[in-house]
Length: 190
Image 1 (cartoon, rainbow, N blue to C red):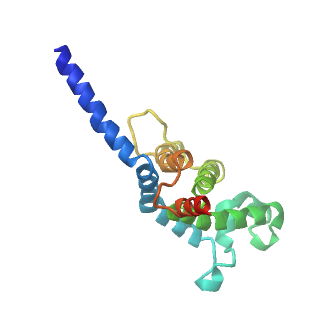
Image 2 (cartoon, rainbow, N blue to C red; image 1 turned 90 degrees about the vertical axis):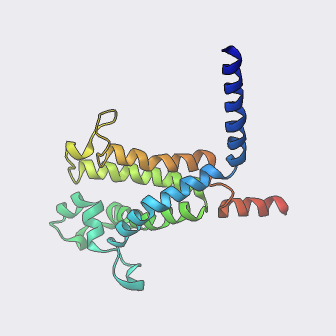
Image 3 (cartoon, rainbow, N blue to C red; image 1 turned 135 degrees about the vertical axis):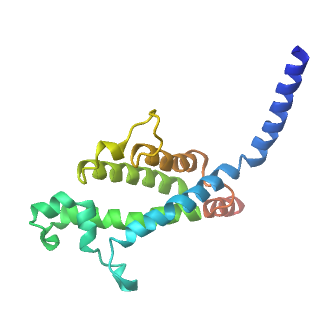
């Protein structure tokens, strides 16, 4: 019996050790970026589009909806008049949040400045969650809880899963199939 267990653990170690070595440099980062692109990129892109004007030139103008989504207390304090909201700090926060929602996911997906972009997205999701709970008053049923038997809460469960690929990219990097890797390779050749 001991020799069978020794054989099976040795086989396990050889097979999975080989697979780990095979994919170590490129697989985790690529899978994390693919998962982010497949599940979250469209979400963030659509959300960001609601915060700018229409058409190509509209990209350069922040819509009133962005203020309602990001800085609702400031809009309410200004009597609902978005133009009366001060640029510092609210206008700057809305502008940075809007363009971060376009730029950071793109950087994660293409693998450029991936670790910094992933950390930025983690911060973005944290702020988004805080705003959803404190400003938009998301109810406890939508917030949910970890370690309960219901894996479908919009905030606690989903956002934790959103963070996993971003943490992988932050810790392991974007993988060999990324612009970061191409730039690093170019630096070592010069």
